Image (cartoon, rainbow, N blue to C red; front, side, top):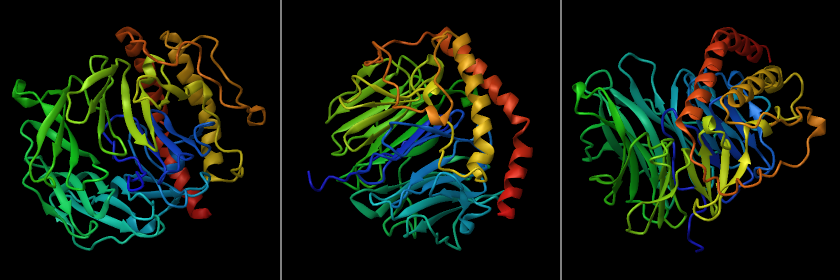
Length: 445
């Protein structure tokens, strides 16, 4: 037990899904969720969650940034033209070494001191690089040479051997778009392509490395239909490799996108899940088969320090984030939309977060709650005070929701998401102006 790594042993990132990071190490006080309407962050173990808007971190509506917590509690946010770092959650600053690079994914070792960033150049024929930080994300070393005609997708460090790193990418992204696996045995400084192949996959995402065996790695892939010229996605598949990504075998498939993956601290249990109720949450123990745990839709999964964190489908009226200590059989809602608080009161009024996010949360929260109420996914009376001075302990979960075992109806979910998508359209018209204003404020500081 002493040798068991303490971090969540799964990258967990998948396109168009929510995303949660906890840590680093055995710390569970720092939690960040990438939700559909911005970032929701807690620094007290989930007792309170606060809203951080997209504009403060300079990323656009609909974009899914990568996230990481570093050793000193700094939140890193990877965006399309660089990396934002926030030690206080008030004034994000850029890591200038990565300016102009598309930061596709972030990963860190169990200590949070080593951070790797998968970078894609802005060239028409992209070049893949992996930048490395040995000081908790304060500075990064960016290799001069990279992998030509390669578009990175994910990167993940083996918890038990930080020298072993895996990455996935699209080779020839403007042409064949072949999903490939890459391996590094020197901490991400050099890379080689493995022999693994994924017939029928449109892309592949490194999802987790076994916490005790660095040669065991899990991957998720979106699958392409053989009909209609192969243009249709037909769900996802989970693969595992036991030989350092040289070969892979399929473990499971889902009907819809496999939005969630998690791996327990001893590597003995694997969870997968998706928003489709036919997939829900599933668990594999040892070498057994996957079994259904819950039909409730899953948007992300992460195992950390003895608990399973679950992002739920917002349109179903579920929690933004829940936590389970019994392998997912029951879930304790950590935060709902109506319980998210404004930006941290410790942020000065002149801070970037206060300047952009306080007013944004008033409008986003009201519109989101209204959409959920209209769709019947939220109690019409659900609300909490917005006045920071009136904040009290986090509200307990509603009676009877401890197991969160209600299957969402397709009609309710569809109506809620339609309304929320409309919110995104309204917001997008202000995006360019706000981003330019944000950059102007940063230059003036």
